[in-house]
Length: 325
Image (cartoon, rainbow, N blue to C red; front, top):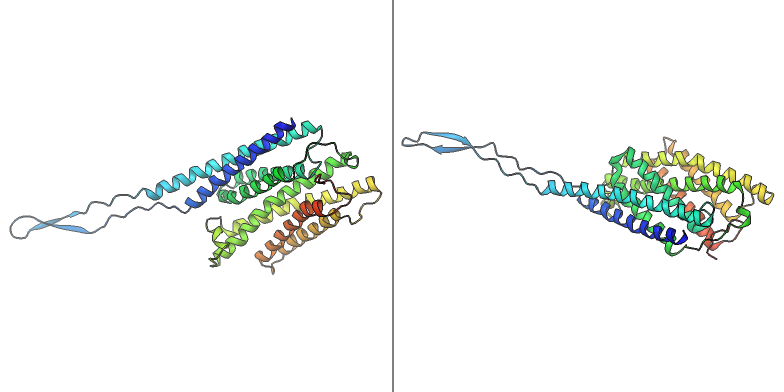
C-alpha cells in the first residue's frame, strides 16, 4: 500500500502537469475571436452595348477567414482537456491519500508530507466545485494547477518520509477533530490565495498597467469576479479555522495541562488568525480599497506557509511533528 501510494502521488503530479500545460495552451489562444471579412456594399457598373447603357450587379462577398475560428476551437478543446486532467489528478491524489492511510492504519496527517498532500487535495477539490458552479473562471485553472505542481512535487521530492506510527501525543480523538478542521481550512485558504493574487494582477491591468506581472492577467476573468471569489472562499474558511484553533487549545489542555503556551506553531496560528480577521474586517469596511484588503489576505496565506514550512523546519516545540529531523 505504501509503494502504491507513492506511485499514485507521482502519477498525480504528472497529471497536474498535463493539466497545467493544457491550461497554458488555452490561455495562449484565449483571445482568439472570429474574424469575418464583410462584403462591400458597393455596386459594380457593367456596360451593356452601344450607347453606354448599363446596369449594376452586386460584388461577390469576400471569403470568410477561418483562422480565428480554429484558434478558438483549439483553445476550448485545450480548456476541456485541462479540466479533465485536473479532475483525474484529483482522483489519483485522493487515492494516494487513502492508500497512505490504509498502509499507516491511521488518518494520513501525521507528518508534514502527509499534511501538505491533504491540504493540496482539499484545495483542488474545492477548485473543481467552484469550476462546476462558475465555468467562466476556468482560465484561473492555469495558476491553480501551477500551485498544485509546485506544492505536491515539493512534498514528494523534499518532504517525503516513510510511514511511521503516530507520536503518543497525537493518539487522541482530538487528532481527528483538530487536524481535520485545520487541514480543511488551510486547503480553502490555499485556493483563496489564487484568485487573490489574480485579482491584484488583473486589477492593475484594468487600470492600465502593462508591465510584469500585470500582463499575465490579460486573459483572466474580470477583477470584480476574482475579488468576490476571494472574499467568498475566505469568509467560508475563517470560521472553520477559528474552530480548529479553539479545538487545538482544548486538546492542549487535555494533553499538556494548559490551553495555550505560545509554542511556535501556536504563535503563528494566532498570527494567521489575526491577519485573516483583519482581512475580513477590511473587506467589510467601505473606506478600505479592495486591493488593500486583498493584500492582507495574501499576507495571511504567507503566514500560513510560514506556520507550515518555517515552523516545522526551523523551530522546535511541542508541535514539531514535521518528520524531517
